[in-house]
Length: 453
Image 1: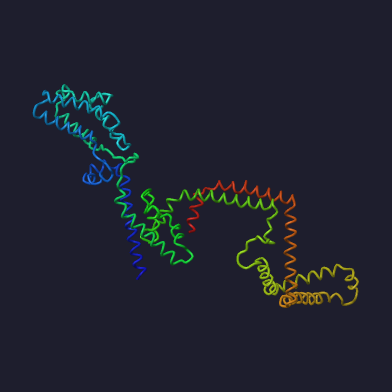
Image 2 (image 1 turned 60 degrees about the vertical axis):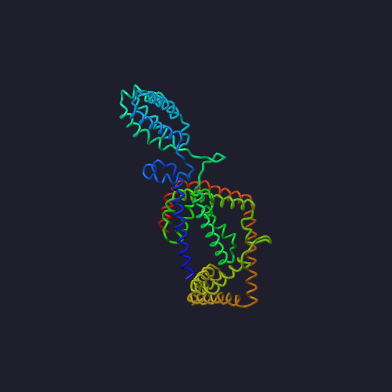
């Protein structure tokens, strides 16, 4: 029952994370896509502009209001009226402001500035936007072109661009106003409480993990309740979606990290190989390569001590009780052949061959003798291993063998010629094999590894 409610809670939190991510990316892209929202969803712009600290540009609003006044004045008094001329002079003065970049200072509005200049230059067939606006707002030009046509140009080409301009309020430190945190605060509180509860429960269920350890192991969830770097909430969202099996993001993560993993694994592999070779080379030059055969007091052991001795005892027991009885027939054949070879090559055997009937004895004699020797050897080893005193002698023999082997190996390996040979050999491995690893395409290797998963 408890587990089912926990699953419901986790899925509910994940859905809230997805909703929050949608709002986060909407907020991040709002200014860049504001022109589209303004065209398709103007009501949304009216609601969200105050949250982003955006206000309509007062310069653009005043300019459009003056155009409306001119349109009304021409409709009632015509182009020759004195008040119409005053409005045209006012528009010529305001148009000079439109030709400067101060109105379009933000990077998002540079496109509007360039497009506004291009349209008036094309209309007036001049290279200067300032001269084009001055010429456009002349009485002679409007009489020649006709006010209805000029008004249509303004309505279809200029007004939509000026409507997109805005003023973004800034704080005392120069940062643009963004009140998205007011919307995000409820989500951050929910995610923070959920994070603390889950980590505390983990520390209670696993006694070897403290609450601090559980928090540190889930560091990737910190962006969920931090008011910055909100786009990084993609990481905890992907992890939790994968854990609850709502969406299988394994393939997505694999494809997203495919190339970085391939080339990173290639670098890690070569680094590890070089590190191992260098460590082995340093051990050879220091004469400590086989030091582990006789551990010192500062040697750190894990589990039961004397592992090499225990392994040797197990191997000896296996040889005595299992291997030697199994190879006894082959051992008899080897002993018989060696006895035949030794005896037949002796001078005594040549003299004994002169005795009548002796030639039929060697086969039977050597066969019986080899059988007895093989059986005696097997019985001797088994009895020695079972006997307390014999076991002590075998242990002494084994220990003496290991110590002598270790001593002579260290002496041999500490000799300068052996050190040089092994050091040069390890250097050859680095130059020939590790360097050769660059000839293999890491992408192909990773794809091959994926097939065996």
